[in-house]
Image (tube, rainbow, N blue to C red; front, side):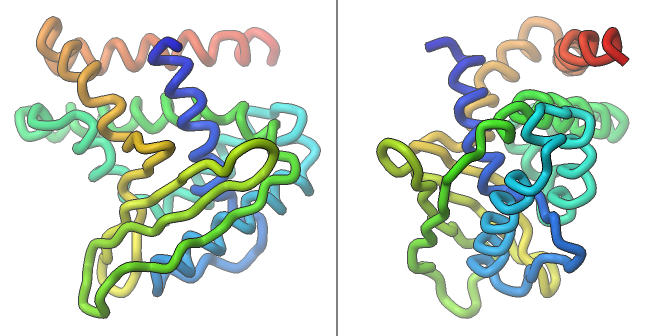
Length: 213
């Protein structure tokens, strides 16, 4: 299995958990397990109710993820973790570009997975945390055909709210999955080289969409 195939599988399952909030009400971010449960449940209902998503309307999926999911994700921390020690070496402009290109890459990589949502359900494991903890791991399982799929989240408390900053599928944390390849690219071509590589991948992925529109 190639790294790209692994990432697509990883991110496809992750999409179920991060959630697309179809309802008009904002998710409850006051407790980490409640946030994950609500986003997870609303994901499945949203996909089942939206024929455009089921048909693979990537532009609509991306728009929904950007407006509904991202408020509950610390994407700067997620990007910094994936880039690793090189993040501190990047200028603020480079950090902004890395974050933008990485977000686009992730959304385009897993957007198509939402079309595969059928009869999955989410199981939430008991939260192992103390009342004063500001970082926790929420553990869930996605159940459908075949064996249950482990899906865990790292969350941090920001003010009165909880935000996701990493996701674990089948024992693989998302940031770890990218860190080695990002480090290799930076070692060979610098931070700007990584930005260009991500931008090129995103441009290539969007080309068929642009051609059809």
